[in-house]
Length: 104
Image (cartoon, rainbow, N blue to C red):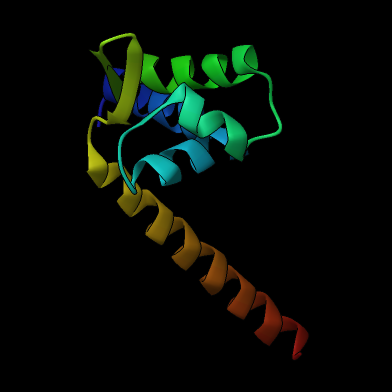
């Protein structure tokens, strides 16, 4: 990997590095949604949710399409969901190592 490739990867990882953004990705894994459908799922105002969506769009994780007056968001590359499984494996392995070290 060269430095430019590493910077691209960091940009994508940074875009996901917020609980709300991870939750948006998770929700879009179940189907395309407009902001009006996502908003009730979060304790945020629309402008804050839109800023999170913008970060995900900027990194290429999600895209949007217009359907009449609605803007529908969807995962551009659903393979991003594989990151969730990998992260959970790291967390479980780390927990097990710590548990063995502490002999719990």
